[in-house]
Image (tube, one colour):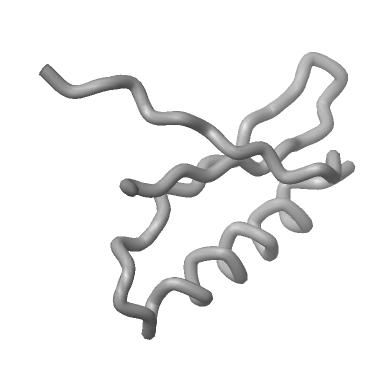
Length: 59
């Protein structure tokens, strides 16, 4: 049975989804040419219409 992923939250909260998606692309690109398994990156909307980025990876 697989475990739930452990999420790492980015320390900044973004006012727009566009800004959060730019960070998401940057995180994904950093792993693209590496030897590690790439992360699963999500953008989550907070209750006050701001966005946060979280990611996980397999160890």
